Image (tube, rainbow, N blue to C red):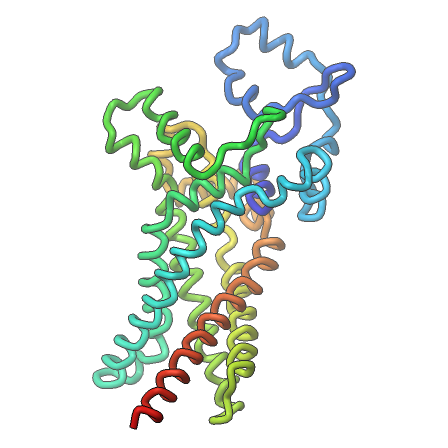
Amino acid sequence: MLPRLQAQAAGVPYDGFCRTGTGCIETNTILQDLKYMPSAVRTSIWSQPTCSPDCTRYRGTLDVFYKVTQQEGLSRLWRGTNASLALAIPSVGIYMPLYDIFRNYLENIALQNAPSVAPYVPVVAGSLARSIACVTCYPVELARTRMQAFKHSQGGVRPPGVLKTLVGVVSSLKTTNNPQAFQSYRILWTGLGAQLARDVPYSAVCWSTLEPLRRRILARIGDEASASSILGANFCAGFVAGSLAAAATCPLDVARTRRQIEKDSTRALTMTTRQTLIEIWRDGGIRGLFAGAGPRVARAGPSVGIVVSFYEVVKYAMQYRQSKERLYGR
């Protein structure tokens, strides 16, 4: 539910108007179209008693869990899981192997020509691999953020999935101001600059911390490394590196979320990461820049630890099997 906290900080109205006998009316769509309503209608709407801020205003991570469960149902906590799975499989499948390829290639070049730059190879390799994975899988990332950030107010109707969410993004631009197909599909990469501005530093911090840490742990283990020790060493290193990287890049994550949830198609195509960060600072200061930092760090540490450790264990198992085959083949 991290996008909820960041979207609320960005100004998405989760609070609503009260109506006698019915409680709160969600205003996500009302406030978007309010400026186009006649003045008499606007006056009538604003004259309605407003709900208490405690009605739907999120005050923290646990408050998000509680209110989403109470107001939208327990299943809503898993909203966007299909998008997360659709994103994680190709993203990790591209990211991790490319990182290994780039790291090994660049390390060989560095050790032969400039040994002093070898410690910086993980930074470059991680940034390149993450950039390629990010550009390739970005539309699914956009769909996931929108699915998690906005409420679905139509009771009894199944919320839109990944494909319908992306179709809705494209349709919103086609129906407003743009007849060109290229421009319409370009909106699927709305906020890509902010995503890269977050992911490249994230990968740089993560791998520059993870590589020396896990190598130091594995050096203590020595030649007696087993699958379980490799799993533990990589999980610990990944947990620490992921947590530090997530905390350091939180403002860029907030900027990325704000750009992805922008509903004005024209503004979405013209916003820049720098402008977005300035807006966040102006609206919320330091607190706004680090909105959702707690759940982001809590998620990133275990996530990086799990992905890296299992990837390395699979590599170890495959190499062990190949060595056995070569031994018995002789």
